[in-house]
Every structure is written in C-alpha cells, then in structure tokens.
Amino acid sequence: MLKVPDIQSIRAMHQRGVPIREIARRLHVSRKTVRKYVADDFVVEPHTKARLRKKRPAPKMDRWKPVVAGWVAHDEAEVKRKQRRTARRIYRQLREEYGQAVEASEETVRRYVRKLKGVRSREAYVPLEFAPGAMMEVDFGHAEVILAGQEASLPFIAMRLMHSTASFVKAFRHMQREAWLDGLVSGLSFFGGVSSQALFDNDSALVREILAGGKRLQTPEFVALAAHYGFEAVFANPGRGNEKGGVEHLVRWAQQNVFSPVPEVGSLAELNERARQECLQDAQRRHKGGRLVTELWDGEQAQLGTLPAKPFDACRKRFVRVDKTLLVHYEGVQYSAPADYAQKALLLRVFWDRVEIADGQRTVAVHQRRSKGDPPSLQLEHYLPVLARKSRAARHAAVIAHGAPEIARYRDGFLSGRPEATRELVAILRLSEEVGLEALSRALAVAEEHHAYDLESVRAVLAMATESAPHEPLPDSAMAHWPRAEIGTVDSAVYGWLTEVAAGGWQQGACWWPRGWRLCTGRSKPRCGPCVCRACWHATGPRRRRWG
Image (cartoon, rainbow, N blue to C red):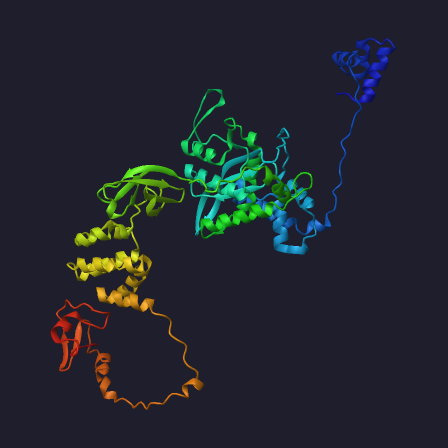
C-alpha cells in the first residue's frame, strides 16, 4: 500500500485531468494501482504508526524475577499442563515463602508471568448470570499426587454453585458410579442445600444412552439420587465443555492450586481435608462486584433446597448368593461372608471405598473395596467355625495366606515342627474371637520370635500384653515407714552351670539334669517360651529339669 502523500499526488493529478497512463509513468506505479486510488468509493485512511513502549523499570519485582522464572520453567518441564501453577498461585506462594519481603503487587506478578508464558486469550464467551440457588455445575478432573509414597493419578469431583461460585473438591480412587454418587452427596452437604438444577456432562456413570431430541436415559442410581434431593439434572451437549465453563474453570483451578505443587499425603482422607480447606480459603476471595464469596454464599442459602434428614446411600445394591466356600463375587473380585450364610442369598451394597454384605437391614460383613485382578478379600473370623470342624484345612487355608503376614508365618513355623497339631493351631487362631485379630497378630509375632509354638505360650503373651503399666516407685519418704528386710548374699557356686555353658558345654536341644548334661530326643519344642523343653518335661517332670 502506498503512503498517504503518494495517494494525494495521484488523486490531485487525476483532478487536473492528467491521464492515468501519464500518472503511472511519473510515479512509477502500475495503471491498476492508479485506478484503485482514483476510484470514487476509495477512502483514504490516516496512516497510524505503532507506538514503541520503553522498558519500564520494576524495582520491586526485579528481585523476584529469577524465582518466578524458575518456578515457571520447572512447571513447563516437569508438571503436566493442567497442574501448572497459575499467576495467582505463584503470587500466593511467594507471600507464603518470603512473607513481607515481597513488595510487588499481585498484578505486577501476573503481568510478569503472562510475559513469561506468552499467554494471550483468544477464546470468546457469552457472559452468563445465574439467580441464587438456580444452577450448580458438576464435573470430574484428574490430578497427580504422591499417595503413601506412590505416584498416582487420582480423579476428583468438582462442584460449583454458579451464583456465589462457592466450590467443592473431593478426590477418589476411581470415577465409577459410586464415586459420582458419593461426591454429589458430600458436595451438597458441604454447600448446605440443593440448587434447582445441576448441569453435568454425559459420563457413562450418569447417562446410559443419548436419545433423540436431546433426552437422556439415565442410570437408576442417579435417577434415585436426583429424586431424593429434588434437583433437575441438565446435560451439556457432547463435546461442548464450554457450556459448563464455570466448573471447567474450577477443575483447572483445583489442578493448579489444590494439587499444585504435587501434594505428598499419607492417605486419601488427608488429601480431601486439604482440598476442603483450600475451598474454604477460596471462599474468602472477592467475586465480581466486590463482594466476598462467603457473603454471596450465605445469601444464597435461603434459595437452596433443604437437605433431606437422611443422606442418600451412595452405593449400588445387588442380590448375591454365598457359595459353599463362603464367597460372593462382584466385578471379578471375591469377598467372604460369615459361615452361617453359606449358600444363602444376601444383599451386596457397593460403595466407592467399601463393600457391605447385609442380611436385610443387618450388616454382616464389611470389606475394603478392591479392583478387578486383586486377590480375594477374606476375613479370618468368617472361616474359624469351619476350621474348628476341619482343622487340617488350616495347612493350606487361603484365608491365612492372604491375611495378616504374622499369622501366616506363625502357622508355617508351627506346622514345621508339629504337623499333626492342627486342632491346637485352630484353637490359637480362635483367640482372635476374644482379643481381636490385631492383638492376636502382635502376640503371634512375639511368640514366633521366641519359638513359642503352643496355645499356653500364646495365652501368656496375650496376658502380658494386656497387663497394666507398672506403678511408679514410692519415694524415699514413704519407704521410711516400712520395715527393712535384710537380704543375704548368695553363694556363686549355685550358678556354676553357667560357667559350663560359657565354656561350650551347652548345645541346642540339650537339657540340664542333676547328674549332668543329657541330649533331648530331637523332637523337643518349647512349651511356654524358650525356657522349657517338651521332651524333658515328660521325662523328668517340671521339678527335675533346668533349661540351659
């Protein structure tokens, strides 16, 4: 395009009657260009020159630029895009780590981060406005966490009230139907009420089929939950996540704030408590219009529906039959049931984190939920009545092999020396009915350490574990009122046998008789710890033997 002075010359010569060919010859342009600029519909626009901004000094931000640049570079190299820190999160982290030393404002930090990331918004949206209690949006996202020392990608539910923008986040181990149900129940309880409508995507946990005319065939558990809480379920069009932009933004916020930096937690409960606190802290921010989210949230409570007195059972219910090995099957996993219900029909309630087996309204067994391909979930108390009648089955019982490792090791050690004493082994296992499985496991670990493979020894270990702590010694002032007893010395010759032991005269399996050393039969096993030899007990009696 020609400059404005050249255009002015062309149009001036054309006004004086100079032919187009001559104008083109004089100005060294084509006749087509001349015709373009002399046309009646051509409008001359003023030439604007882009302004070059000078680099503005930022004395309060210059000190923190290397720190911020390092965080941004680390996120781009090590962290997935959805969990990278936002400019707001970077500013908050600066204040958390360096405190009042950070004098730069949040807007200054945002501007510098935007420059580093090269972010320019190109998406256009239609502004929406929601009445109090009118709409809630729900979606699932994923985040990387370190759970109990192991890296894991966990799904989490995100819920937002669209008027006040109050938010709720909760993580799960999976996002099957039970996780959706539990997340909705927990979120509605967190909000303190129910909105008139709730917007979802078309996840298979909620929608079985999309019908003609935009209708949905919903799953029965989700229909029951919506009816229980009294909200209308609305679904976005497939592939149109922008239709629920509020919760989509919440998912990104959670990935970049709740789960960034990547959290290291010991349990899922700890992670969800952290997410809950982050949501409560986020409610202290100011919404559009300058009001706090908490103020809008409190005002929205009056327009939310009342929560039912009894929460919805966030589970699937199935009738199952217990087989003759006391097992029920669900999604390729086996769960044990009590012996009284062998080959009977029971109700299976499957929650996101546990499985309950019920006889009517009475729960008879609870298992931690497992995934397909995991080993069966077997509980020892379910099989103890059967083992009491069939004690030889304890040698290869799967319930022991898949149970506490202390019990499995003790069984192996017990049977290696006393292979026929299976009834006594079962009697030891039945002690769990009196003291509990955890206490028995600890006692068997102690008994195994001392090679105490008999019932009375285990009872003694349990008794010692349940004894109360020793009393504090009496002070000297209190002791002065008690009579003193003279204690004589003991002749060292009484312990002469220890000298022979130290010289190598004692060996494993040997017992001390009054007339000298004698070897055991080889089948000797401790009766009540490492101090009793069973073979010598029967040969000489308790008063005539000493264990070396």
